[in-house]
Image 1: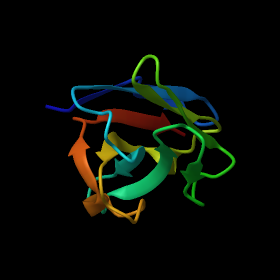
Image 2: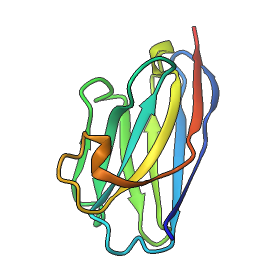
Image 3: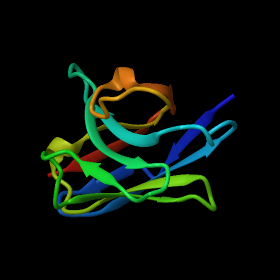
Image 4: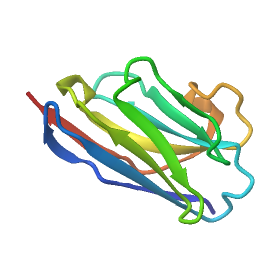
Length: 124
């Protein structure tokens, strides 16, 4: 049973930084990649970033490119989302997810497992 646990969210002032972590356990060896999404109240879940299992290839959404970076540490079965220059519009619940066979990395339906989410709130 795959389990994903996010941590690192919190309250930060605009311009500040946070690093989110997602620890994975149970059957992750055959996944194709892992991603970060976010969802604000009343909005659809939004793709943020993706990293392949090897960590060789990463993709970051245009909306956060230049501010957010995704990385992974396979020795720890953990992926990270470094978020810099945070803005109030970055306020959302952030979720990590594991992709097994889905092709479109920006589509939540491509991901088979999800964490419980961690809240990020950016004050102005």
